[in-house]
Image 1 (tube, helix red, strand yellow):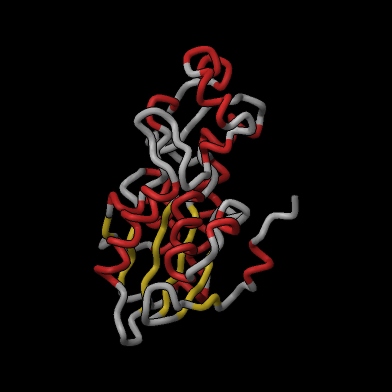
Image 2 (cartoon, helix red, strand yellow):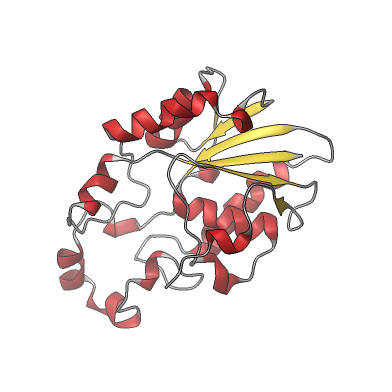
Length: 209
């Protein structure tokens, strides 16, 4: 089985973050930026995405629109299990505001670790353990022992957890993975935890810190 995983294109919230606005996004339903749309459309000629049997997308608009522009298909299957990691009460709010409301969260994770940890999380939000559980459920439903080829359009933290589940990674590695916009990550295998990367070496996805 071949699985092609693609992070959505740049979103409007990504632009705000890049411009210095410290707003938490999480699972807010934010549309693509103009650049995000442009980059997604360029994927229509990507060889990895040709002739896939099925296309799955997060139910959030930035992932779904990326899938639509990238494949030109109308039969995209939305699945909430592969949406982005929720930041609960923090979503749409600034770091400055949340430090005042929830100082205890920052005391436990002064570097914002709650955004990508298997234990820590925001009030009413998810951690990587929660995300990995729903993603594992998704893959238990779709992984086959044949030559099926599928494409999945989703989000950065969701993709980290997908690689954790499919490749059987150590937890310490997961939060170091860099996931570029609108770039296919291709895996092959027939059993959860035993997939292999096709177009990357794992070291190429690990951030240099």
